[in-house]
Image (tube, rainbow, N blue to C red; front, top):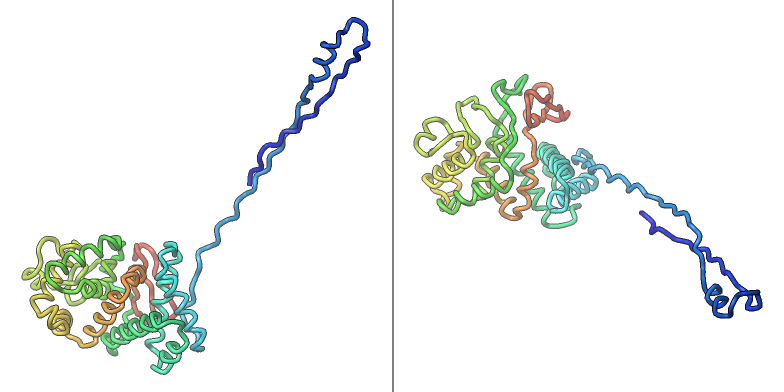
Length: 312
């Protein structure tokens, strides 16, 4: 804090005597009211503002104690939904939640139930239910396939389009076709983590919504790697296969698995319930299971090294 400057005046009073020779009473009175200010010195002090606190980190519910795990989930969810949470803290909270839900999905259902009972609000209990259900279905979708030694060499992890841009494309395509925008967001999220994964799949699918070339030829317009064009094509494809009236059938045509259908609906329900949840999903990392452990593939991979989470 900077103090205001303080001026201190020291006055000297010059008094004259009316009896002094050659001095009139008027002159004496004038001199008696004259003051002289002495120079003063000033000092200032500055206070260095305190450094901002470091961004919060969040536990990923690895505790075997359901009460502690519930506290971790609640902290991550509340930070994710709070619009005042800064970018780095939002990322930390979202990824902590992502890893937590995967871990809980691999545990017995009774552990999830115990965590749910210890959560502070119904909204967070619904977040737990939707996210763990989606994780269980996606884990089941991969079946008992053996983990790879390394991620696909052709993959590149790139920055997704901004959240506002993505939401605009989902809602634009929804307005044209009637397919719920939350379903389009969930498909984009599951297929390529909102466009982060750039590369052809092992089956030959391409683009942020993962179209096979023949399907793109029938429903695509423009560039298969354009996020807007790809979302619009996905909406047309789902519409042609029964959405929104027969939504389950339409999603099943996208990937012939009941587990896929249920995972898409779980994430879509979470987003539809509270659009702020999309902010959290936007921050989720690309995870890849290898023989050496569960890896995070950050933006910039493979030029940026993967991070081993220690999980499976």
